[in-house]
Amino acid sequence: MSTGTGTGTVTRALFVNEARLMSRTPAAIIFPVLFPVIGAIVIAAIPAARQPLEPFGGFSVAQTYIPVLVIFALTSLALTVMPQIVGSYRELGVLKRLRTTPASPGALLTAVVGLMAAVSTVVTLIMVLVPAALGVGLPGNTAVFALMTVLSMLAFLALGAMLAAVIPSSRVASGIGSAVSVVMWFFAGLWFPRAQFPDWLLVIADLTPGGAAARGMLDATLGAAVGWQPIAVLVGWTLLGVAVAVRTFRWE
Amino acid sequence: MAIIDVDGLRKSYGPREVLHGIDLSVEENEIFGILGPNGSGKTTTVETIGGLRTRDAGTVVVAGMDPADNPPRLREVLGMQLQQCQLPGRITVVEAMRLFASFYGAPLAVDELIARFGLAAQARTRFEKLSGGQQQRLSVALALVGNPRIAILDETTTGLDPQARRDIWEYLAALRRDGTTILLVTHYMEEAQYLCDRVAIIDDGVVVALGTPAALAGSRGEQETSFLPSRAVAAEVLRALPGVRAVRVENGRVVVSGDGTSTQTVLAKLIELGVTAQDLRVTSPTLDSAYLSFTDDGPTPAGTEE
Image (cartoon, rainbow over the protein chains, first blue to last red):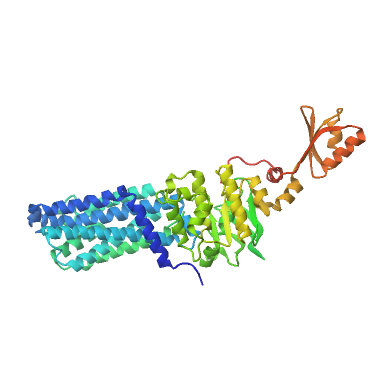
């Protein structure tokens, strides 16, 4: 019926456009991306950080912190950068404008989420492969580590989408996203290694997306079997975020 | 057959009803103007026609489709330029045009459209660096890049300098010659008079007048007849004449305002009185005064900005 261009073509054009606009705003992603990447490489470059340590439950400092830094990058992009972009598009009227064209604003949201996922993937690969080459080694179970990374990314993106949907102001959404990120980092063990968490705190932490992400990635790093709980927790948060976002999102 | 047909359109925001039953129809290949004070419901009307807002009652048919169903085909045939819609600051003119062109099956040539809207020199300028007028022209060009059959333009020339406004008028007139139907919301009577085949005046959510600009001006517009009388004439005498609405004296000039027949009536009376009308001037009725008479009925509540 329609003579218009296909949804795939339109989404791709919007994705390329978003990538170009992001490359013109490097400051927006330097903190969420550059800081953890440098952190991961520096830690991996220090020989002592590659030795297994008792306080870290037999992991080395590098093994413990690389997943945490990956979570740092994923949460920053999904919970701070993405709500800022989506919220500003709503405030500028870009989403409303797109509703007047054959391209749905949903295609723009898909492009933004897709770009965040692409940047997250590239950053994660750098943060795992460069330290691996420096002697930290690959995660014991690479496939499971990759799976946990993808599930974590989806959970954080869903929560970011929920923030962008529920909170009308881009600044407030992005600010709350930053605060949520800090909590995620805590449960992931950025401030204290999770091996030092008391049992009751571990139980709570493992029910949060940050804690579940760290748990799954650390188990995969060690090569231990990953239980169903972190997977179920991440999928659960993803479904919750998507459901709330879809129900509450406003185009203007 | 009308390409846009609106019948009994009602819309409320919360408890406040802003459209109390709008009826209008736009014929194919005409430029139809919507005039009205701020807050009268113009934007709500066109955004409902464009399918961006839901209606509470009435029917709307655009090119045979109901915009409430958001049919994909509608987006191909209808281009819209909205108030207060911006683009990301760092996108350039040519990038925005190419991006929007990529949404449509048969878009216009981007470079030609950029040149047509006088943006060739700014093709690689970022949106945030454009002047207000340039942003506005880009916004109109984006609404037209899909080569739509119908274009809805909301206050397209607001904030433009007179030359830029003229350029857009010429372009819109050319579009009509090519067969495009244009629904134009405007504040400028001059624009409506110059461009529109028909206009609807909306006040407080209802259509208070509809017709050609000339007919509306003639029906309610004031024709002013002014002259220097060779000797004093009592204002009451002239005011009593049929078709005369007001008489005033400014620096010795008698100014009579009334309908289209008032000039002849006044001159006939002067001849009868043996008074010569020197330096006689007659101004034709304007849409401006008709507009004011249609929208000034009763006191307007303060602070009814859209």
